Image (cartoon, rainbow over all chains, first blue to last red; front, side, top):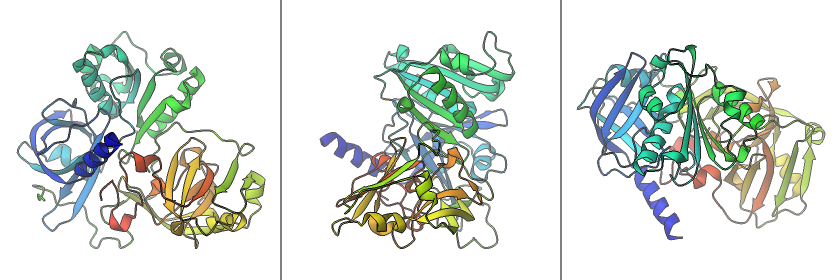
Length: 243
Length: 202
């Protein structure tokens, strides 16, 4: 199949390492950072895909991690959100040290499962920095003039701990804040009742967050009647992608 | 290849020789990574079938599987997302025991492993024989947790861990290779961590 061959060719090109230039660095408190990268010979991503960043020391030592793309495919720069993991070798460097003008080794976009085509109904559910790939879907939905296809429900402990909170609220995402609920009106938890009201067997569910969060959401969705076969999950704690 | 300004990295004085290139030691934790909704499979509903290019299709239920002589594998496991877990142990049986019962045909060259969720992963037959691959139900002495693939998962520790399918329900012998779930979705067909076979084209 021609399409499949093209996909495979693009995938092979995507796994080549490229030196991307950091164009913009925006800190999100001291918890995280938004990096915007100019990637040479960039292959357009699909919302939900991720990039690998690789840090290289003078002596050749490297450390790499995966981060979901936040930007829409049409944007010129690749935007990534990096949350500081306590004692994280890569995330603390990206949050504390990286400045505009730095070069970072990248490869991507990667992944063909946790992706949304922008043509069918989708329900995105994200916890904390798990909103990153959902924001890419959101931006894409607006750009192609199909915002009604995508419903979003997101949660964090407080508005300050929810990346892209203003953008999500502006898009009418359901925002649940579990500790400091300073954005009324809104629920304080994504519980069985809240998720049950969002169940849509005709939609694909994109669920992204910590293991504990995603397991809880899966249970609520199952109780509400969302078929397991419609649920795509990206868990983190150690990165994105398979075990 | 650009040196990252200001990056020194966190190396122990000598890198642990058990870590393949690009991997880090996750210590005592064990991250959970799956693409699908986590199923709840009671042992009463558990079945494991070996079929395809075999002389005899065989199915084991929980009691029949547990009646086989268990043994323990101890060593290191490596996830493509760059974590490795060193010196951990699992209890189960070598896949050889199941294959010996079903007797693969001489034409069999590969296996496709299927989970109860529909997840699949493909492996060369040579990678699942001679005690290189296991079907396990305990991790470090405790029943395998649901999120880690319990009640029963595959363990192929010499390849990246997406090959170690959780919630295993079927091992199908084949006379040709065909991509499984992640292999269709951008990941490498074999996944040798020592060769860093992470993605398509690596």
